Length: 205
Image (cartoon, rainbow, N blue to C red; front, top):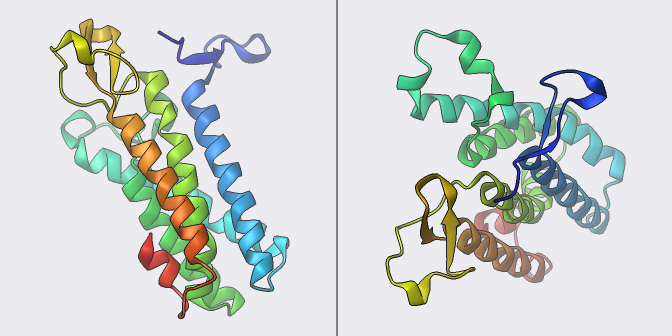
């Protein structure tokens, strides 16, 4: 099992750790931004616009990802506001993140007078690539796995993943989704120049 903590006691501060999950998610965000940069330039926008967009979208995506997670795990957070906001303890959901990103994109478009469809199409391929990379954080944390595998012939990666917590093999659903997301990313990149209307790439996503 990989230690989920990449760096312990950063700067000598007890408890100030950097988790692999955070590093992997950040890598996914950076990869998504770079893809967005490429597509934005194809559409005639500069990279400064992408940075301005991210300054609005990222905070809202993180906040909404946390709200979504807490809402669906309410029995664990009810009555404890500090626990609700303790995102450093883990607990975000991609669905909430997408909702937050859409809200942020809409605000940005109203502010900068940019077509909403353009922004959606710029962001969609990078978003799915970020998801493909981010799923590997589930591998490190040993979460988001599937059904128990009892057939020893099927107890191998990538079909399965060994989970230390219950000392058994489970379907590696994080890997399945990561590969599916990667295929969707390729499909979107191939489709983006053929799309006839603004927003079509996002709809395809």
